Length: 266
Image (cartoon, rainbow, N blue to C red; front, side, top):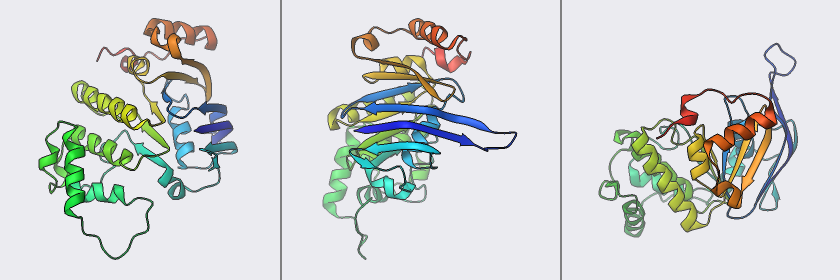
């Protein structure tokens, strides 16, 4: 479903602030893979996701999505193929619009639009049924302005918006990092449910090792702009945080960043 072929990306090239963010990254995701991406700060995790999304062009290499070479496509032309949920719950929704209006925008993404904007009764019924699955009480609040929702409610809504029109690839960029532990677990459980039921191909960047191990069928670890570990199948199921730290130290020759979030019990 996704082929990343030897991509490089350097920021501020030729200056004192030059930073090699991606250093020959290659990765192939099969249809239905749910891949978690772990690594310390500056390892290249979010840069890789943003390269796939077209936020900025890569310096070299190719990105192929479901057989389509999207390397040269601008961000808006990739949008019909991708679903994205960002770290900031405010990013994926329009705060001044109602819940049903946000969902209608998501449903119309990538489609030709006429002069009619109205949301039909059938559409509202469909939105209510989809929201009911989330068990957050939003199905009875379709006319509520999104800006009045909690961070967790907005992130759940963003997740639904990103997956209503089954994307070829779902990108989750630390989408629970700004949430409290209980709400983060709810959103992660919803992510698992939607990905499994819709048979989506997904990549989830996280700083939390336990989340990276607990979710998905595949785990990759990045360091200094490279993929240094790729674990899947039975090996991933048996993986522990201690195993992961040991593997990182063996391969990189250094200790992992001492970030509390990495070893969080939440």
